[in-house]
Image 1 (cartoon, helix red, strand yellow):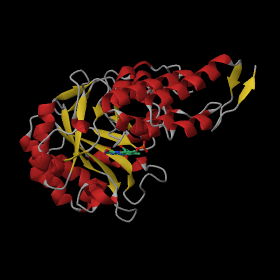
Image 2 (cartoon, helix red, strand yellow):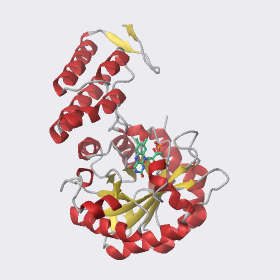
Image 3 (cartoon, helix red, strand yellow):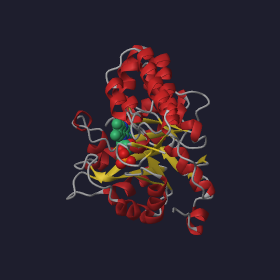
Image 4 (cartoon, protein in one colour):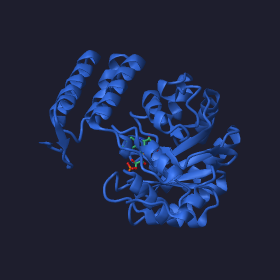
Amino acid sequence: MISLSPSLQARLSTPLKIGSFEVKSRVLQSPLSGVTDMVFRRLVRRYAPESMMYTEMVNATGLHYVKELPKIMEIDDNERPISIQLFDCRPDFLAEAAVMAVEEGADTVDINMGCPVNKITKNGGGSSLLRQPEVAEAIVRAVVKAVNVPVTVKTRIGWTDQEITILDFAKRMEDAGAQMITVHGRTRAQGYNGPAKWEWIKKVKEILSIPVIGNGDIFSVEAAVRCLEETGADGVMCSRGTLGYPFLVGEVDYFLKTGNLLEPPTPIQRLECAKEHLQALWEYKGDRGVRQARKHMTWYAKGFAGASELRGQLAVVDKVEHGLEFIDRAIERLANCNWQEVEGEEPILVEV
Ligand SMILES: Cc1cc2nc3c(=O)[nH]c(=O)nc-3n(C[C@H](O)[C@H](O)[C@H](O)COP(=O)(O)O)c2cc1C
């Protein structure tokens, strides 16, 4: 049984203030490359109308040379509050990209200083900025100077366990003008493995005046509440927990505001959502959208009888109508049997 302590409730009862910008929710949907496009954000937004969303990360060098707004940077007028996330190592390119982000309607501009992927770090971007704090500072200063919306940073706790530099780094970001920092409690070397070390988020919160957002391993309402309690963070950001589950941010938000748990979606409701996601990706991106939808579909197809068979079908789908048909059949099977779900990794059904 999860409960919201009166002190936590009081702490979270005011809006999240990111510089001059206010957000009426303390849970954020993280930027996820290849995932948080407009279609995905619309689904998350339905259940979390007041939460902050992030685009996928956008390459500032690419923008500099192409000068054309990429699809991943498009935002809809009614999807606020939203932040556009940029990555690069060049302060001038990032400043230029930030101006384009604001023109597109971003409420804040976020700089990625946490991405562990080699392709990004070898060019000086993402988490490699943890090892070049002077460059990171110059980036924040240049972007702050270029735009009139708050500039924020998302980063990790350090490069390796032997090189946890987040305390000095976070202070530098604040001093350079960042208005909020999100700390993913893992090192670059960890990738996404091992537990997130929330204790470092707590330490960062203790030394900064700007809002600190906790990130890493927020897979449930219970984890969100525990992270807020243990770290004193001003908010939490959900990431992998939202893959195939765009309900999570809304569930956390509802609990933080009311102290009540929402009824979780049934397998059929999750599959209805998968259908809507597939259809919308196809409408937005055509056949490329269907190929992109494969991974989403396999994330949705979990936790009910027949899920692994459905995953196999959806993992290779190339026509939208085939995908919809496979899901419809799975829904029909679930709807027509008088069965009860048994919890587990791949639940089996027992007759009732
Ligand atoms: C598929 C995927 C894509 C990601 N893309 C981004 C990104 O574009 N920008 C970013 O700052 N972090 C990105 N991340 C990192 C997440 O935002 C988050 O920091 C990380 O997954 C830790 O949270 P979790 O343990 O709850 O998943 C990505 C993670 C995954 C799994």
